[in-house]
Image (tube, rainbow, N blue to C red; front, side):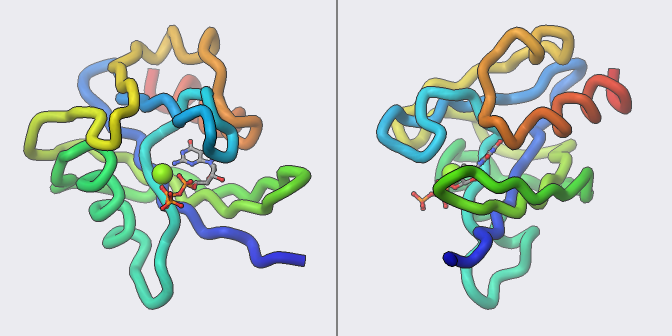
Length: 131
Ligand SMILES: Nc1nc2c([nH]c(=O)n2[C@H]2C[C@H](O)[C@@H](COP(=O)(O)OP(=O)(O)OP(=O)(O)O)O2)c(=O)[nH]1
Ligand SMILES: [Mg+2]
């Protein structure tokens, strides 16, 4: 049994849109769209992890974040704890800083995209709370 991985996830908002990134094909859940983020390191606060990951992956500095939801999900090969936060303000120009495709997507378009299996409750909550 391996340990559940704590992941800081950002739902980055701009008007009625959210910023998505496409996971590189070789990664776990590769080729799918994700909310940018990554693993919380030992002794790191989740907000600090989120800010760091968004700088590394998207090249932005998040200046306003708030807790949105948490969820645990068991993939056959990996267990994750997603700690999801809204990002309502940031500075800098968004870019795929690790060579990944990024895209602003309207809330209503979200259900037509392929996400990791764990993400269904996140989409449901965006569509019920934010639209
Ligand atoms: N960022 C992100 N990860 C997600 C989402 N949904 C989901 O199941 N995950 C899973 C996939 C991965 O197993 C894990 C995130 O790990 P990661 O590979 O992005 O971690 P990281 O950015 O720290 O990457 P690395 O340093 O290990 O390369 O969480 C999501 O919407 N966003
Ligand atoms: Mg990541």
